[in-house]
Image: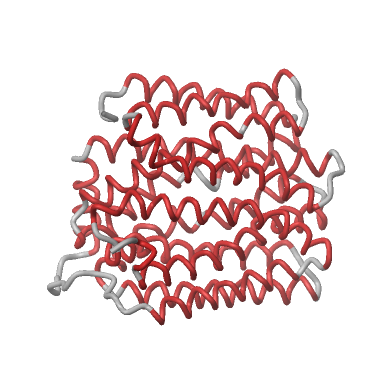
Amino acid sequence: MTLGRNRDFVLLQIGQLLSAAGSSFSSVAYPLLVLSLTHSPAKAGLVSFVRLLPIPLLGLLAGVSADRWDRRRIMLAADAVRALAIGALALVVITDPVLWAIAALAFAEGAGDAFFSASQMGAVRAVVPEAQLPAAVGVQQARSAAVGIAGPPAGGALFGIARAVPFAADAASYLFSFLSLLAMRARFQETREPTPTALRAQLAEGFRFLWRQPFVRTTSFLYAIGNFTIPGVLFLLVVAARQRGLSGGAVGALLAAFSACVLVGSLASGLVRRRVGARTIILAEQYTGLAVVAFLVWPSVFVLAVAILPQAFVLPITDTVVVSRRIAITPDRLLGRVEAVRLTIARTAAPLGPLVAGVLAGTVSNRAAIALFAALGVVLAVWATSSRSLD
């Protein structure tokens, strides 16, 4: 059966398509909102930091929950929490927005993301045969990229109409995701035996499995640094664009160009995987990330927008290789915990990317922030080249 005829997979993707569309609206609206209220890149970076913080903070607990309890119920609860948080944020924006309330609701949305993400891969594995996992990951990447093309410009335009509109649309999108999960028939996990094992022991089991898999271990740490630099660079793109006086829609268009390259990479991933080995693909992601050095020579927002496009093309191809292999080799009973450990490693630094970028942009310059990210990119490229675990 093809993925297009797989009812549960299609339902899952439709729900996530709508949810991702809403999230793309709010992702561009968050920094635009804080910048419009405070005119401070550092405070905008702080809110982005708080929104991403729950993944590393709650990821391990979410992973144990995904392996111990019903994954569908966890995902439903996460969607409900996210819908309520973003709906409340829309109301706050309409009334009298204050920074602490925006940050608190952003954290609540991020907490829902942490629990949803820990169970999502189990849902994919439950509805997709192992042989089709790379293609399924490719579909997910293409879906995210397609949303990323239309979402940021639309989010910026909606913000221009009224500051609360993109957040209200995001709240509605989580309700659509909730309904799609309810309509699915498959169980999201295999039958499990009750276990009295303590929480610490369960987490340790997931960590040991990951650590004994060289490919998963190495890519998790490579992603950790990449998840610091990429959000930071994208945040700086928004800051530089606003400093130049570009409208919310124009800022969204710059982000959409990044997503357009991700979409092209997603569509080309099958062809590339057949012709190029996993190691070469992963190295390509690291080396294309060094193109941001061009901004140090010519500090234009448009130069930065173009410089990030080559890596955008490679990112989804890398994910189809890395994610599908990781899911395939991980036993179902450990999948939530291994994903949680991996996410904790890979995304611990992610909240710091926009925060550091905002502080450096506000106190020194955008070029200083890009110089830091470029230096880390060199570290990544050298490390990946010398590693024997990526074959």
